[in-house]
Image 1 (cartoon, rainbow, N blue to C red):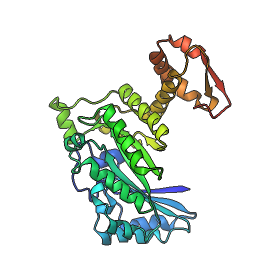
Image 2: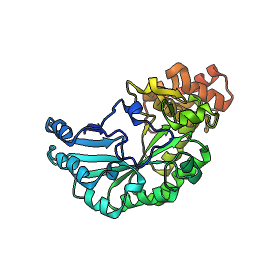
Image 3: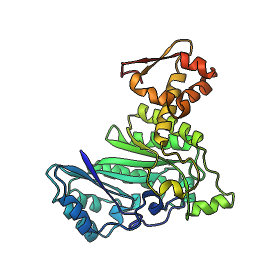
Length: 317
C-alpha cells in the first residue's frame, strides 16, 4: 500500500525532550495545514496509508484533529491512517473519537519505560503511564506502535531489554510494532548542552549497532516485529548531528550485527549457512557483519569468512 506521510514537526508536543529537534530530523519546519493535507489526498489514485508523524497528534485540540481526519475521508476506499502521539494524550474519549475514522495504528513515543531515564530526558511521565497508554490503544482495537530509543541519558542495555519484556507481557500476543532509534545529539537541543558540560556521553556507531542488534534478537524471540531501526535519512539530519551514532545506513548495520550474533551463538566448528539474499549483511560496509562475527567468536576475519556458506534457503535466520 502506498504511504503518504505528513510531518507535524513538534506540533502540540506537551514538552521539549532533551534530545528532540523535529525540524532538524525531518527537514520540515512547519506543519501542513488541513487544506494542504486535503489537496495531497485529492491527488491519490489508489488506496494509501496516510501518516501523521513528527508531532503529538492526539494532543492537538479535537477540532483541529477533526479538520485533518475529515480530509482522510476523501481518500480512495480502503485507505487508512497511522499517527504518532505522546502517551499523555491517550484516553478513552480520544480513542473513541479516533475510532470514527479509519485509524489503524497509533504509535506512541515511549523512548523508555525506565523512570530515571524518562526524568533525565524530560519526558514528563512515568513508565507505567506509557505502558498503560499502549494497553489502552490495544484494548481499543488499534494496532499499537512503540517508538523506543537507545543510548539515552542514564539508560543501560538491560534497561531497554526490560522495556521490551514489559511491552510483550502487556501485549499478550496483540499487535505491537516497534521502531528503534539511536539517541543522537542534535544542534540546538538540551542534550547538546549536556554534552558540552560532560553530563552526557553518546554511544559510538559500533556500540549502538550492537545494542540495537541485541534488541532485534530479543524482539524476534518475543514476537514483536521491528518496522525500522534508525532515523529516516533527510537532507538536514546529517548536518544537524553534533555527536552520537549517526550513520546513513544505521539500520543495515544493526541487522548485520544481529545476523553476526545469531551465527556466533551457533557452533563455530561447523559451517554457517546464510541465505543468499543476506550477503550484503555479511560483506557490506567494509565487511561490518563479518567483523562483528570475528570479534564475537575470536576467529580471524578470513577464517570466519571461510566458514560461511551462502544458500538459497530462507528459513535459516
